[in-house]
Image (cartoon, rainbow, N blue to C red):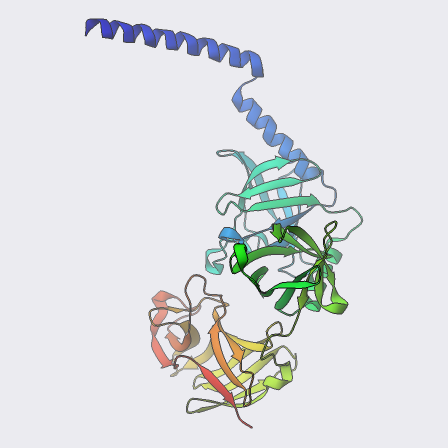
Length: 418
């Protein structure tokens, strides 16, 4: 036992001496402290971010596994720690300036420190999009900066905006493509052969293969719009053909692959049951109720009477699907003292989250029959009906719940009268 202890002590002394030598050698190799090297690296990243004279095009992906697809944010940085942001989710001429910083936290991290209504739209808890506002810097050159969301781990790529392109014009080009190719259903063809049908939800394609084969039946394809078409988050390979970049063909309502040697395209088509805006106007039966869908002057929304006893319901025409969507909304004063809200629900829960609601699915046959399904705005929960909730204050909150005023049947079905 005594010998074992002696050997242990000798071993420990040897390791300490070896460690001392290693530290000395490390100083010789790097010639500076780790703190100074980190500081220099952060300063270099800042210089690169500031160097883009016309800012950066940031392909931003919120949500785990790129659940909502990508969105264009335009960002410029200055030496004073200010970042100016624009984006396709706002008006093309809107810019908002806030603060940013670069710091060390398990790697170099770019943080948008103060609130920015465009940047933080994706990361606000109430919106439940699960986006990042802090990003680990993976690599940075004047030609490209690659970030990784600290929470989602999504790759976020920044490329310099060309000097001659105005931000507003870039965003208008993106929005014009979204408007021109408005349908949410496509057929993917490769070398003239259809390989599957695609349904678009947000900026994600869901591809269902015509012949599943070894690929499996369904594949999700997140993408971001560009000022010329769309860019996939990562290349997809189908039947030996790899593709990632597509140009918009607005005349033929399609996206055509521009990768070298590839003959592929997403061709839009009207989904079954599609109805144009005016075709949805009219009187419907909904259980024992008579419901009237009235066109609004904007040609994009409807006013619906008879849906609930507590006010007029506003609905939005979903051009990509040829139907309309009803989302959570304020209805008016009820019983002289409560604030009445139409709220999405299921058998267990209710939500008054903005944007959550139901979208209509139209029948093929006459009379037009509309059933409703969850529009995806709730998040992980799925709604199948509505109830009218009474609140004692605005905006609605758990503390202000007074109880429900009206519960709708499940499922909600509207049948158009002749």
